[in-house]
Length: 159
Image 1 (cartoon, rainbow, N blue to C red):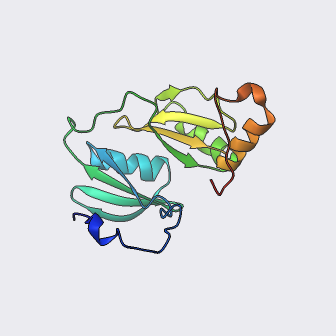
Image 2 (tube, one colour):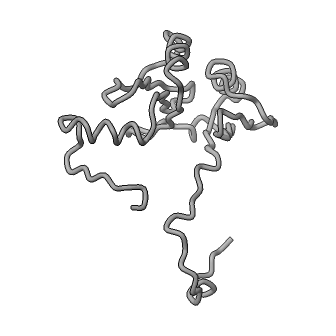
């Protein structure tokens, strides 16, 4: 679908500052669908919602996770800090951390507020389980000047 800007240039209605309502779904390229389903469903506890020959839909809280089978040459891990972070409760963090111990490769040490465990899935996707939220991160930075990233400016919810 090609957007046609000329259709929108005469609108007199002021748009909302952000029309995005959240993340709709996340698709991860996987080499071995069975292995990925075992990992995300069996180990992490995501619920299976649909499955077909080359993919599956799983659910974790409000997250719709799509696993899509592709050749291993296309499923290459990133070399930067890009990752997918899952929210867990403090009790869930302990349980899941113990469940993951010795079964995953860790890729980063936690240096942020809140408990975090950074690990790889079987296809090398960088994942995190984290106790906390944006609000707890900002509160932490407001109360601990020594932990604040250089040049940090915090904005209220209106921008």
